[in-house]
Image 1 (cartoon, rainbow, N blue to C red):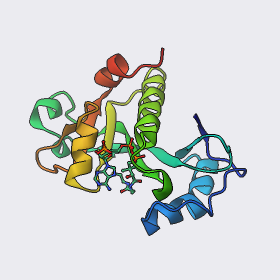
Image 2 (image 1 turned 90 degrees about the horizontal axis):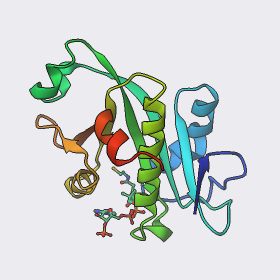
Image 3 (image 1 turned 120 degrees about the vertical axis):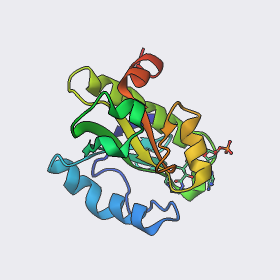
Length: 165
Ligand SMILES: CC(C)(COP(=O)(O)OP(=O)(O)OC[C@H]1O[C@@H](n2cnc3c(N)ncnc32)[C@H](O)[C@@H]1OP(=O)(O)O)[C@@H](O)C(=O)NCCC(=O)NCCS
């Protein structure tokens, strides 16, 4: 298995995760956004390097203290910078075989590495369903009480638990 930045040799047209918005983003927008430094999209491939098994997109964001639990908000009196896992999807042909997990862990390594060089407080993700929120929570993401489908992992946790060897 290999994770690398999306490039023009990857067959974007063949990717289908069952969610039209996620397919369209990969097919039409992801490369343009990467070229303009708005986001970074990574793909997981296996035996055939042109076949996209899963993809994930990381962006930066700004968050209001009111959007996170009070115990954390006390540390951050003003708007603060964070990273966001904006998209994660696996092609329907390959779901539930661990590929999404592999790519998510790779994203956590990349966020830990970025956090050594750029200041931001952690990683947010918006889960599509309650079950998927549980899946993210199993990796150490914490659900926000006021928005239970939004989860957060502080950089300290990422750096300790998910740093690349
Ligand atoms: C969510 C997603 C990225 C997971 O990718 P994956 O390659 O299947 O992930 P893994 O095989 O590593 O892990 C699967 C786990 O994710 C959860 N999961 C995967 N698909 C799920 C679904 N349709 N409904 C509920 N939970 C699901 C389960 O906890 C599952 O573990 P299990 O198979 O042991 O029960 C993939 O299902 C997907 O692309 N879904 C459609 C797009 C989407 O909704 N993306 C938004 C994610 S917030």
